Each structure stands twice: as C-alpha cells, then as structure tokens.
Length: 350
Ligand code: SAM
Ligand code: SF4
Image (tube, rainbow, N blue to C red; front, side, top):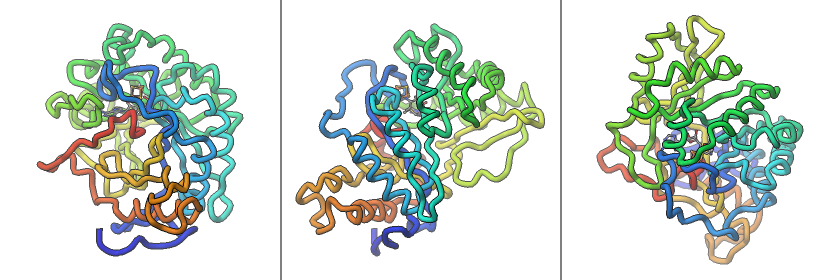
C-alpha cells in the first residue's frame, strides 16, 4: 500500500478511502460452548495457545488508545465471550473509557446466550450497553444438528434473561441456511417481537473453519425479503450509516427486522470496523488475509516491527494506523480470485 498512514495519536483513524473507524470488535476467546456448522468443525479444532491470549490488562490498554483515536464502540465477541472468566471486570474497565472529548464509549456483546442469565445483572451493573444473541432455529432437533450440542433450552433461558433486562435494543441474529432453517424466518421474527427484540438474518459467509461454504446453499437477501414479504409489508428505514444491517419496519412498525447481506449486497463502502483477535492480531476486515501483530508490540517483543516505540502507547497507535491505512475498499468475496481467510469465524471474532 503506497504512502504513509495518516494522523497521530488522538486523531481519528481514517483510511485511504476516507472511512473513519469508530468500532472495534474484540474477540475474547476462540473457544465456544457450541460447534455451529457454519463457524467451526465438529472435531479437531487447533485452539489458540493459552499464553498467546491477550490478558484483560492488554485488551484495556489497546482499547484506551483506540478510544483516544475516536473508537466509540467496543463489541465483545469470540468464540463465546461468556466463557471468559474475567468478562465482568473487562466490561467494567472498558465502559469506563472516555473518548478524546471525554465522551463515554459504548460496550456491546455478541453471544450465544448460554449461561447469560447467571451473569447478566453483573454485566449490566458493569456498564454493558447492548446485546446481540444468536438464535438460528426454535426447533430442538435442528438446533442440535446445527450446533452439534443439545442446548436450545439454555439459549432460550439466556434470551429470556436478556428480554427481562434493561438492555435495548436487543437483537437476535440468525444465519439463514437453505434447507436448514429457511422455513423458520417468520417464526423467528415472531419469537423476537414477543421478546421485545429485533430479529436479524445474516447471509452465510465463507468463514467456517472447515472451509465448506457453498454459495448455492446460501439464502440471499432477496430470498429472505421475499419470504418475510409474504407475511408483512416491509418498509426500509433510511439512515443506515455504517451499520451492517438494512432495517425494515414490519407492517409500518414499530417492530422491525434486519437483513445483513454481506455477500450479495456488500456494505464495505461505509465500513467503520476493526477487529482484534483473542491472540492480539489486528485485522481491518473479517476477510483480511493479513494481520498486524499487536500482541508483539504490547509485549515489547524485540523485532516485532523494528521500531523504537514498541511496547508504548505510541507503538499501539502506530499499528492501528498501519492497519487502517492498509484496509482494502471491499472484502472481495465476489471476485474470482477470492481466498477465504485462514482463520475461521470463531478465531476472528464475528
Ligand atoms: N459465539 C457468539 C455468537 O454465536 O453469537 C459470538 C461469536 S459468533 C462468531 C458471532 C456471529 O457470527 C454470530 O451471530 C454467528 O451467527 C455469526 N457467524 C458465524 N459464522 C458465520 C458465517 N460463516 N457466516 C455468517 N455469519 C456467521
Ligand atoms: Fe460458537 Fe458463535 Fe461460532 Fe456458534 S457462531 S460455534 S456459538 S462462536
């Protein structure tokens, strides 16, 4: 990538296409209580080595520099973020961060909901602002086949706890899959509405650790809208900004549904997201095939970059700017030469 990264500490993170970065997705672990077919293989996962996983101190340190550089939202993900023992402490420390003008940041989490009820009050007290919970099916047999675990009741318990919490908007996410759950779209929306939540359907992306993605099995945005349109009149809501989901009012509102069409209607032109993997690699895109080693910089490991500011906040800032500077205009899923990233979704952080 020609040229040099722009700005210095405290300046916004702007890429070469003018996109200002406001959102950091932080993966807390690559481990998970489920084995969703579109994300992980049934067996044989090579887990990240324990010592490579960033500590809470390291994550907060990166996030503090990010907040000063204009990142306003931190979304905790994984793997399954609820498996992280220091989660409540981490949420408290992240939600206490302030932007360059002293504005508070927002802390959100994407989870499968298992054991959510046991910690939700503590997470809310610690300052968690928003929750997305994944729910692909309401049928126990399908849930078992899809996640290779018999835990639908635990997920539904987690959703009930979230529905009873003050966290709003509450969003439920499903990956729509042909012949798997594509006959449940209406049921899932009705379930979400009954729980005061918004259902969002995601096009399946080539990010499974087993590399089994098949474009033909993907349910497209247009197919989802056609199925939903049989039941409701869908009115598109303007003002999407950098959000991945297109949002539609159901029969004029106030209830809504979202569609995330990353494959057939990419939203890269407004992308404001960066990603930090659990082992401290910084990525400019879900589909990036290269990463920058922030962990080495954080730990002051000699030779990480040959710079004299390694181990310092200036060194972290420099890596953030290099990552943003190298960001491509789009993910390229639809290009003939597209290569699926080596990491699966569970190890990137969705
Ligand atoms: N374990 C948590 C969960 O499932 O919500 C957080 C991590 S998960 C990787 C984050 C989101 O990515 C989930 O909503 C999941 O459905 C979605 N996801 C995983 N693999 C995907 C794929 N291949 N295509 C589209 N979405 C995917
Ligand atoms: Fe686990 Fe989430 Fe991946 Fe499913 S999508 S296997 S719940 S990380």
